[in-house]
Each structure stands twice: as C-alpha cells, then as structure tokens.
Picture 1 (cartoon, rainbow, N blue to C red):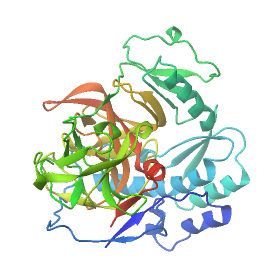
Picture 2 (picture 1 turned 30 degrees about the vertical axis):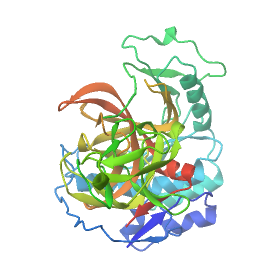
Picture 3 (picture 1 turned 90 degrees about the vertical axis):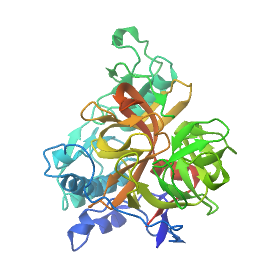
Length: 425
C-alpha cells in the first residue's frame, strides 16, 4: 500500500528527541527523519504496469573507498539518521554553524559558534550512541550566513551564494573565469569572508521517454503551451488530497497542459500544472502518479520504490535521474541554503548545490523537474530529496547540453511550501 508523508512543523523537545535513538537493532540507527504519523493511504493500483527492478545498483565507479554502492548508502543512511535528529534540535538554536554528513568521513561533523546549549548537547550525546559526532568551531552562525548569502545573491554581482557548511563564510558563484574578489562590491551589512566558484552561470535544465499511468518520477514530459521538455518528479498529493507529481516551476505556468514522452495526444495526457512557486522553482502537475522512480539509463524501464522523505546534507552523495541523462549517483552536495539568479532571470532561494565528483555530467538539458534521491539500504528503495532545477559548468553529456554542477530544491521544503504530501510505499 502507498502512504503519504507530510513534514513535521514543530521542533522536537529534549525528551522527545531521546526516543528515536532508543532501539534494539541497527535498523533504528539507520533511519533518517520521516513522519509516518502523518500519513494517509492511497491506492496501490499500478495502472496496468508491472514494476521491474535493476539490482545492479547505480552506474559509475564507487567513490570514497567503499566496496560497493550498497556499502556507501548504508553508511550515509546511518549518519543521516543521527544528523537529522541533531539538526532538528540545533538549527533553531543560537550558535548553529552548519553540518556535514560525508559518508567517507564515517562521522557527523557539527559546526558551532560559542558554547553548545545543554538541550543540543543532550541530542549530540544520544547521537553518539549510534555514530561518531564531532563538534567543531564555526566563525559565523548559519543564520547570519544565510542572510548574507541572500544579500549577495540579490545584489546582482554573483550568480549565486550559499553559506560555507563549516560556518567559515560565504561561497559565491560568479560567471567570470578570472573574477577577482577585490572586483566585487560588498553588499551593505555583509561581513563574512567570501570564496569564489568561478565560471558558473545557472541555466534552467530544459529540454524515460514514453511513460503510461500511473506515472513514475524520471519520465519525459512535454508542455503543450510552451513546448518545453522536462522530467516528471516525485508523486505527491496536494493540500486537498488530489494526486499529481512535482516538477520545476520554469517548466510551465499555471493551467499549462502536460503530456508524456509519447507526444501531444489524448492518449498521452498527464494533467494540468495547478500549483507553482517560482522562488523554489517547484510546481505540481495534477494527474495519475505513483511512488516509483525510474533508474538506469535514459531509456530504462526499471524502477525503484520511493519509501521516505529525507533532507540532503552537505557531504551526501545523491542521484539525479532525469529523462535526458538517466540515473547518475556520482554527485555530492556542496552547499545548502543556496540563493541565486538563473540566466532566464528567475531568482531562487534556499536551494541545494551539488557537483559531479569526477567532473562529468551531473544533469543535462531536459532533466528539470526530475527526481534527486538517495538509496536507503538496497537498490529497490530510495528516499526523495530534491527536484532538479538548474545546471552550470558546461560539460558534454552524450549529445545533450549538460553541467557538472546541479542545483535542486529540497522536496522537504517544497512540500511544506505547498502544504502537500509526498507519496511513499
């Protein structure tokens, strides 16, 4: 049976924070934050489709010295489970600088300015029962850096900006390959140091090829009004309980009609874009969608079940599975809280920026709106994390325009913005 997950709106207290860490088996330690208490049952009718699996796992050489992709994602899941609970306790506390959850470190790294409050320290101590947690000094708080990053992004001198995950300053994306920091005029009220990511202009990622209901994430979509080719995202239910799927806001406007990769005909009609938030580059197309995601190549028919809704932390490996590029998991999160302006003039805020770890394709034209996820413990279950939005650092992607840098919105934030619920199995 399917169910739907909605975000928690309150921060857990100290007493409640203890409960997720107390368990009798490893499965408890390897569970990131969901909210199964806020679920509703949905139909499990696959619409005549028989899901098939690809048990070989993601393509590409396994990074980080792990024996295989299963080992990497198992360790990342273990660490994320601890990091999520620390973040719930720490993000709203004065002094939080950032958090990094890179599986090859085999520990959670929390950055803090000043003295850690007792309630947060209690959560850290509980987390250490499950995984190592290092607490390191931060020069600035994440709240201050988020505010400064938005000022830089709005000032028009940079294509984007985000807090450094260790709380040391701001990382700016600039279009010039030879831009010098001294050439930039610091916006009023900003004091944190800056480092530059040069040669970055973020373009919306416009462009498996003919899906049928119930629609999976990762399939080709066509906008009848604009002709834009994008990718279907994760299945959701809107705040009124109507089913549909996520996509990027730049893929269409409210009332636009969407069709699958089979073309513009009644047999291929998917639904109407009915919800849209430009600053998150997110939208919902209402239609018959279900909680599966295509994996493998851009022509594959194999899929995985979506079983959870997780946050993407700095240091995490994530998979982009777009209709143009297909699945690629050699992508690592470098910043959260990224704000910037795309080449089409669209301003976005509090996004996630990630890079190919080998300098290759992270996303390609036509992947916009598609799913970004992590595997949980094996290769038939994934956790929803993002919606593909933009690309930068141009690279050759097998005949398509692509980029080695990807920007995506977090499904966690988007669902909260829409009052929607993610469909999961």
